[in-house]
Image 1 (cartoon, helix red, strand yellow):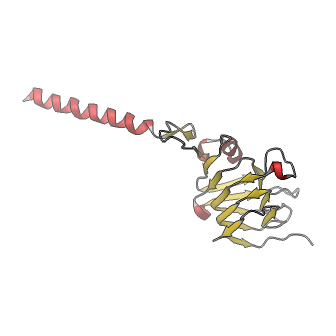
Image 2: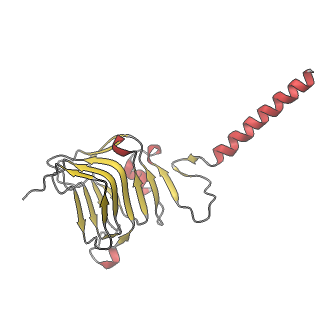
Image 3: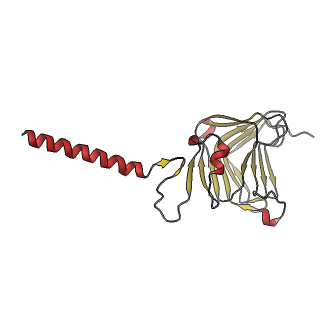
Amino acid sequence: MKRMYWTSVVIVVTMIIVSYFCIADGRVQGGVSAGLRLPGARAVIDAGRYPSIQAAIDALPDEGGLVRLPPGTFEISEPLKVGKGDVLIQGAGTATHIKNVNTAGKSALILQHHSGGDNRKAELWRIRLADFRITGNEKSGHGIDARRINEVFIDGVTVSYHGGDGIRLYFCYEDPRICNSLITYNKKPD
């Protein structure tokens, strides 16, 4: 009877250990999707594992991917910059609050090709912003400044209290979409 008891205990413990390692193998480790198994799958970045939102955005590979922003209030004094296409920046609804505290007229979020060029070769495609809140102050710049982004898609984003435009689209002529968003109390100077 004792032998059967101990055999059962060993089997259960072995199953728990094996299950743990099987589950852990597919978890997000170090902030980037570990063990991507599906051919063609792109990175999923957990911003909560990085020292700043900008560091998480910078961790995206050149082919793009997803940056998940956790709930919380995140103060920024320099613009967040997205310089790659095929990117989704997704928060946890209004529980994710990016607060632009700069008073030098700088935008909160800039979407622009990393070269900063102002021509057709400096265009990006398919950047989506979803499910977060971004606020500024009277002395900050635009909330979201998209420059030469084709198929920019802003969904479920609240943009308010900026000194500039809430959302500025500069030469974003190929299918820009803004839906289910709140753009209010922004004070672009005359």
